[in-house]
Amino acid sequence: MTSENNNQVRIVPLGGVGEVGKNCTLIEYNGEFVLVDIGVKFPDEEMVGIDLIIPDLSYVQEHKENFRGILITHGHEDHIGAIPYALAYLDLDAIDIYGSSLALGLVRSKLDEHPGTEQKARWHAVNGGELVRMGQMEVEFISVDHSIPDAFSLAIHTPIGTVLHTGDWKFAGLPEASFERYRELGEEGILVLIPDCVRIESPGRTLPESVVGDALEQLVRDAPARIVISTFASNVNRVGRTIEAAQKYGRVCAFVGRSMEKNIPIARSLGYLDYPDEAIVTAQAAQRMPPEKVVLILTGSQGEPTAALARMAAGTHRLVSPLPGDTVVMSASPIPGNEKLVGRIIDNLMRNGTRVIYPRVMPEVHVSGHAAYDEHLELLDLLKPRYVVPFHGEYRMMVLNRVAAVSRGVPFENVFLTEVGQGVVITSEGGRKDGRIRSGAVLVDGLTVGEVNQVVLRDRRRLASDGLVIVSATLDAQTGQPVSDPSILTTGLPTSLSNDGVNNLQEQSREIVQKAIEQIERGHQGGAVPRSLSEIIKQNVGSYILRSTGLRPLIIPVLNEI
Ligand SMILES: [Zn+2]
Ligand SMILES: [Zn+2]
Image 1 (cartoon, rainbow, N blue to C red):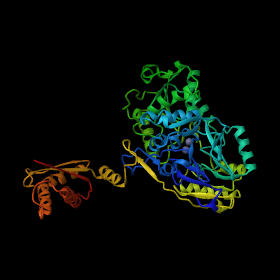
Image 2 (cartoon, rainbow, N blue to C red):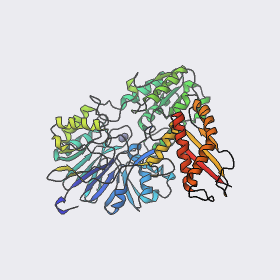
Image 3 (cartoon, helix red, strand yellow):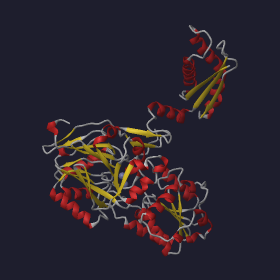
Image 4 (cartoon, rainbow, N blue to C red):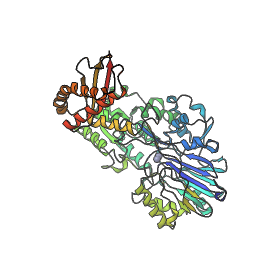
């Protein structure tokens, strides 16, 4: 930092701009910085075998002496999911982490998979209205309404002004005190607003969560037989309202699905849910009970093929199978990209004769946790920010946020549409895009963090689309000549090709291997298998298959010497 840049706020998204997921915002005042959230993103179909994408935190490691800690807005995976990886990755002793007790509980429940991480953090549970000092910044937690309890906006007070990060929010259900606080902060003057804009394409206002609870209660009351409710395990309020309704109408509930079975008892133990033990039975017990006495609460509302709902719909679930007279309620909307999967499940359920209720046919069974367009206008009117840096959205949503901000008097040039790693620097004189830092995405494939690169992804895509060919040959260690015909093993090739093509290939293989050997024999005298032989075989087999079938399978030569 140069001296003329003294007294500056810098905001650098490490994720969550131009994308939905892996939310992580670095907020810095004169070099000292905090991270707001460290979330995960789920991969698209192109990323075969990738489980998660997490933000690159190398900047944090390289500037660890100025790192003041992690602030959590709420307990959703796109905000907390990468914290266990961050703790494992960062070579730091005592990382201060602030968040609601629910968000901290959800993070800590996942640390078993990352040994030694629990001790690397100092966990600070905070409530709405609390203030926390972090170096020269003072952070104020403001309760907001969202689809998980205890979500916060953060007012980060710096010596040159307040940065307001909304977290995920909507106005419906906002506590009166928070509305008042927003208004006060607006009057004092907000330097920078960082608004979640993921739902800004929807006109009007988002409905309050309470309409969903009321709808679920009526459905539980009126279902002629078993009722199955599928929602996110983090939607503690919906699960709570369902359990209450079940008790009221003489039913018991069973949780089905790993995250439901794990997260709901955590929420209960932290005081977010209150129900007697006898309100819940196991899925096995529920399957044996009279259907009209049962409510199943399931994961898999996004159509995830391995989650409880999809397996139940397909009749492959170990514990729960569809029953005649079932009512299935999808208390969630498909996230863009998941529509097909969800549609298929609804079709499968309906094929079984199941009555399915989903948001398209009954909008009250799901409302969003995010603000619609008019709420953004209202927020801008309340806060009157000098600068706006939209986050939590694709580029088009950020543009709409700028449209909203400009319509409410924020100068066009004061709205910064950034990208991951692109900083925005604000001083008392003005704001500009500046201070890019190294950043990007780190891929996690369940086994390794960050070791999956573009080459690995390309191999996996090939494997998925064009199959695998293994060429195995045994060579004489003395002469370097094949001792028998090389064998060809294929998998995942289209069947017609794997019949004709492979038979031909099998016939050709000896020649291909022989040719490869001749190719490298010039200048080579028997003995050890030269390293390039497998490369040449790979190339020759590859071009033969490409010529005869048009496919580019992954080719693995396996050479043995005897
Ligand atoms: Zn959220
Ligand atoms: Zn979010």
